[in-house]
Length: 621
Image (cartoon, rainbow, N blue to C red; front, side):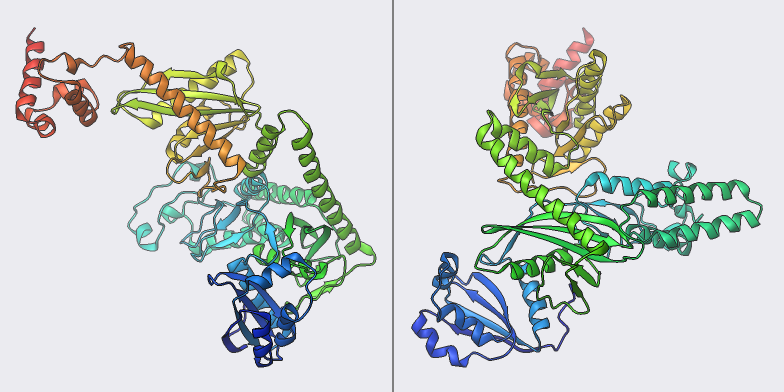
């Protein structure tokens, strides 16, 4: 959305205290007969509503001086304690300012686009030799973001396609000119595979790299023509230099791009950039489908649910929703296609209600999508009300939607590491099927290959052993695997899956313990689901169950004497002191090798001498 230009607002906010209808009648004549926006606040200074008006006095007066048939509008007026308004030069400026404020403050009584998911973006990082990667969080750091995309699979396909055709770096190195000149870095495997031209060792200039970034931007905007033309020029250059092998490699990229272009949803060779919106209303809820058309191809689609808070007309709801969606998706299209006439005041934007032709076909396609979305919601509601065990099915569907899974996660497994006072590591795994614990499938692992405490290596061993067994037994794999921990534990689990050759068989996520954040393999940013969402509750319930099971396993082993603490055999050393030493030095072997002074710093000189004498006598015997 275009910002309000400096100087367009005539008057800043003017405050009026409103208590009753009679009091409003006294001050109504002081309101301006000019275009602008108005804001309603309650007694707690909470923003209730933002509206725009051709004439502020007439519009605000309509709330107080007319008989209100709507309960919601009546409830709003009852709460109004204070009004602020801002005068602007035109209806267009009022429209832009209103939508900007609604997006920023999300007032209680304004329409609400119900969409709390965090969708992925592709970011071109603001740094020397920019990286291109997937993220779920937009940060105001000067980077360029493309999206949001409604499918993480689509994002991975795009990134894989870029990797196949345009060589870029993937490393996190700080490639400043000074660092490169000092020779701080060495090329990695990606350079030898031909996926990167080695800017870290100055094998590629910044200008050449930025040319590649330009091609990526064209590609992500759906503008493949310049990209293909660039490669054709490069192929011609290699051919003229008799570098036929290089020319052949570039030709493969051109063919790859042309095949990809052929797979795009081409709408029309005559249409260029459009935003298409279909709209359906059901009582107080509206539904909107959005198709983004760039260079004649549909590159983005989204359906949202809208809750109308007051007596807004269909035209008002549609105009508000369009403004918010175009802002979210950074749309630059100068034409929008809608099913009925609306008042839309964004500069240089044409509103079209098609009667026939390609634009009408696009609108019909959008209407098909919004109708399908409504039917799906109703079907899910029927499932919840009529089918046995439906609540669990609904929650699993929520998990599938929120995590963008390709399958319904009817089989979920979760891993956690456990140790006692920093010693005796074990791992536990719990299994949920159809949203319920499947206790016969729970497993515990005594860590065998890891010396000392190493959470990452312990996690890798447990995951490897579990899925090696399932593979050998030809048993079904889970759709979702939850790793209790952050990126480190998740990365270790993914290494195990890759070593088994099972990549893509299941989706792995990490659940960070402190922030309740969800991490995906390869993602730079985390996903934060609403804390009270049913999907998040289920994931936390599974995590809590693996905690309980792992702790029980650990306690049982200790009570049976499986873990023998040799320190407790030393006369004069109690359990508390033994645990202090184990916590500090991790193992009896380490304690045996430590000098007296270091042990004394933990338990005091007298007890340290007892411990050292014990191990000295043991060695002599």
